[in-house]
Length: 272
Image (cartoon, rainbow, N blue to C red; front, side, top):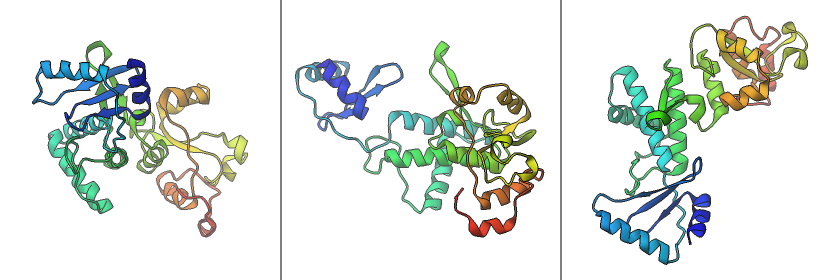
């Protein structure tokens, strides 16, 4: 039965019983299984539930609500953001959710797993992306911490952002280093070498090859590391740019994309 339960958890991550409100979570990174017990249940009742789980068949219920990992990330990001500007994590969550819901014209939602208006998995991912992009726009480098004691590790936005491509573009627009988060001495790095795309910098219009924004320190580091190693270690990569974005980036990075011409915007085929 244990093997069967693990198989289900691997696919669906969460199992729930409709009549007792217990919740099981499977952590893929280390194989840990957590049982979340409601406050109104005693340890004796929890043990009885475990015995029931071992003896009876398990119904798999696909849960569309946000995952426990997403919930933790949202609260951690709100705390980190709030610490930067003097708000509690609860106040910061309310501010960000109000702004998020207004931008996308959606109803307010709950981060509690038991409420009818619980945030969905998809919406939670979109909200995490929004918080990170919002902080980048306003010049903050959010770092959250996961684990406890010796296992406590720092996570940068690049480590947890749902859509890394959008993150890279947000960093380019904000003149922010996509690796360390610095806003100092930032320039554009050609992920694909100029020599392999257009030949020379004078012929570079920004539309050939992938780009990323890096500070001087990270730029030097990247030049001395194989590209696959950088991608694996820092979870970043360059992105292709469209004409409209190149036009905006030319204002931010005046020395780049010397061959770009405004008329190229009319024939734009790639979005960014």
